[in-house]
Structures are given as structure tokens and as C-alpha cells.
Image (tube, rainbow, N blue to C red):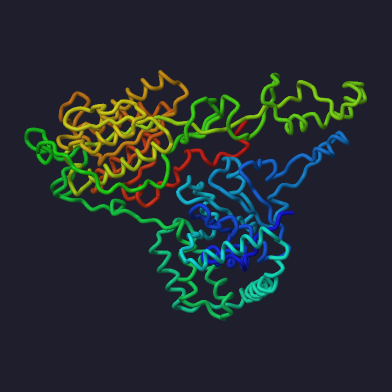
Length: 600
């Protein structure tokens, strides 16, 4: 049995050590996600948890773990011997704690099973910083999120190397030298666990608790519960009889780091009379268009087009959505999870087959096992065969891989986008999304709409640099032909789907709403309704996923974007959402939490 590095011998890494200690005191905290740069002892910390709770059954979950192994699986040996199916209990029943490396790489079905695990089954997991994000539901199930940091102190670095080399040369002797310190830590944790029911919260601690949660804007109530449990565990670990302010602040970042939301000002907008798309006059009725002058033009957008430089590009913390389906594809990429049409990819399940290609031996044996007694009794098979396998038992591996897609940007370049720095922020957001597309090996296309029409400034291409260059120099000015922009996107996507029927495009619309130019290129009070009609037609083709990036600053046009979002069945995000990471729920696919039973 492999030896793990002792918890008490870990140098530095105060955050993960504290998080694991709190989890050992109160397992109902739910789990710990450890993230950080490569080579900073993430896995070492995770596997040392067993030291803090001696005798606990900790089981590893890897990228190769199947749902059968997690929930239950056939006892193949018993089935072959008796001809009857007998099941092994799964890891979720067998384990008292789970340990997982690179949890962000797990198959959808395994992720769904981990989300549904019992509340009192802790999960300690790791992931590299900058990697694909964990599914949002699973992320929320981690009570604490700790970060490992590189060691900068020369003496500590030397100590780390000495400890590791000594451990590798003789694990048993090194563990023995740590026995006293380990026992001391275990005794302190046991004492803290016994104190939990007796601790009282001070009024100041309660006030701080409420203040921190209010500032974090954390969704749901899990953050509240975990912060309460963690602060109480920390006070018990200190040996105090009361939970004080310092206990709450000491654990708050561990609890809130992966839950904190920065709400944008546009989520509670106030009308701006100077804005190009705001209505003038009190109680101006909304007729699907902005206020026009006597000639039917929005005079605030009459200025000549001008180029607005993007703000400093920020990293979009997630990927754009691409829905999972069962279509088999040979393409390679990193965006969309898809069934693999060749012999590459991660095995997720098996299915019956008549062709002896890429057979799954375990699945084939499981299918054959219940029939062995009957087959031997009927004289089937040859002498010396341990297992009689028929063609009807054959099971082919079902593989899953990732493929690239087409990301279409539909960007509002009208004059109103120049107000309040919206275009600068929008360009920064789109460039961030372009960089994400580059990482995922996607093709991109860019459509802009302003004046009286829409234009494809970048046809579908894998040259992200070209798209970024043209977007940076794109001028703004003129009216808002939103309907034309959507119609142009629809034509481009339809053309690409004709070329590749397995394509699943993603279309990102960046606009402040309030279209005022119809499909005929003329200013029209029904222009917004025309845009809605185009969107309704586009929504009929479910192969395309849509996202609305709302840059509006007044409630009227925010309602336009909300309506457009509803028609297209699209998430509506803001620039601040992209920057702050609220986009994370759409990381892998709109159906990322598909249960295993929904798959073949």
C-alpha cells in the first residue's frame, strides 16, 4: 500500500492545512477544493487528510473512475462462479472520504454522481490554477476553497527538498519521526470536535458574519451554513468557548473565494437622459424603439464614426457554452464534449455491437457472466475455456472527447455604444472571449451592425489574431440595426451548418438593445419588434447556442435585452459578469449536469 507524505511535515501551505483541519473537525463542511500552480503540493496536502482522522476509509476517484464504480458494480468473480449477478458496493457507499486529483477533468456522469453524493461524505479535490473550471454545482458543494502558493523562502525550500528526499528514501522511518506531532494534531482535533456543541456566538461575530455574506453576494444559503460551521470549528480548534469576530474573518476567504459575486451596476440601472438609447420625457411609453427626432433619426448617433480603443483586456474565467449531444465527430479541439467517432477519447460507457472493434473487455465479461452455468451445461464452448463469450455479449467502448466549434460574435457598433465607455469595455470583453476561443481551438467570425445594415468583418476563420486586429480598429457611430445583425448572423451560421451538419455553433450578441433600424435599412419604430421576430426564427434551430452580453444602462433597453434573451433561450450576461466570473455556470455545456442514465 502506497505511503502518503505526513500532514505535519508539510512546509508552509497554511490555507490548505487550515481547510483540511476544519474539515476533520466538522465533516459536514462538505469538502475542500485545493487549487494552485503546478508543483505546489496540492495532491500532497489532499492525501495527507487521512492523518487527521485515523482509521477513516479514504478512497481515490480518478479521471478513469466510472459511474458503476462510484455507485455500484457487478462482482464479476461471483457472477462467473455462480451464474448469478452480485453487486459490489460503490465508492460512495464504501468510502468515508473521497480524494480526487484534477477534478475539473472528470466525465460529466462522474461529476453528476459526485454532486449527488451524501452530505456527510467529504470530498477533497485538486485542480491546477488556470485550468477548466469545475461544474458550478460541484463547486458549490465544496465547503472550502484553499490556494497553494509557491515557496519563496530559501530555507523553507531547502527544508521541503530535504523532507521529500528523506521520505522517498525511507517512507516508514520518516513517518515514524512524525508520529508524535501527528498524534498531537489528532488529539487537538478530537478535543475540538467534542467542543462543537457547546460553543456560543458573540453578537459581534454574528454581525461580522452577516456583513461578510452581504458583501459577497453569494448565491443560495450554502455559504451561510459553511461559514457558520467553519467559524465554529475554528473557535473549537483554538480551544475557546465562544465564536468571536476573529474566528469568522479567519475562515471567511476559504468559504467565499469560490462563491463571491460582484454585481454590476447594470443589474440595477437608472435611466440616463444623456444616453443615446434613453427615453426623454416622463413616463415615455416603450414602443420597441428609442426617442426619435422630427426626421426619424436619433440625433445622438449622428456624429461621424470614431474608433474607441478597448480597455485593458481581462481574462474571461470560463468558456462559452456548447450543448452536449450524442452525435459522433472526428474533429479535435477543447470546447465541446462530444461522442468520439474514432478510437480516441475517454471511455464513458459501453454498448452492444456485432463488430469486434474497440471492445470493452470488462463490459463484455459482465454481459457474459450470468450465462456461464447454462452455457457450460449445454456443452457450449471448448475445453479449457474459463469463460464462454458469444457475439451477443460483445460490448463496444463508447468514447468521449472534445471538439472545437464556431464562435460568432455579433457586436453592436452603433453610436450609443460609445457612451459611458461601453464600447471600450465591450471590446475588452470580446477580445477576452476571442482569447478563450484561441485556447479552445475554435474558429471565429465577427459581425458588426451600425448605420443601416450589418457587415461580416471577419468570415469564419481560425485566425484569432485577424479578428482581434479588426475588432480593435472597429469604429462606432450611427443607428442600431439590431434586426439586421441577427439576420446576418443567421445566414452565416446556416451556411456553416450546410458545410458541416455536426457543427454546434455558439453566437454571442454584444449590444445595449434598443434597435431603431428595420430590416429594410430605414429608421422604424417597430425595429425592436422586427429584431424579436428574427430572433424567434433563429431560436427554432436548436443546434446553435446563444449568449446575450447586455451593455445597456437604462431599464427600458435592459428589458429589450431580457426579452431577446428569453426568445433565444440564451443566458444574459453583463460586462461585469464576464470579468467577475459569474459566467462560470456556463463553463462546459448547457447540459453539463446530464445524469449517467440519460446517456447510451
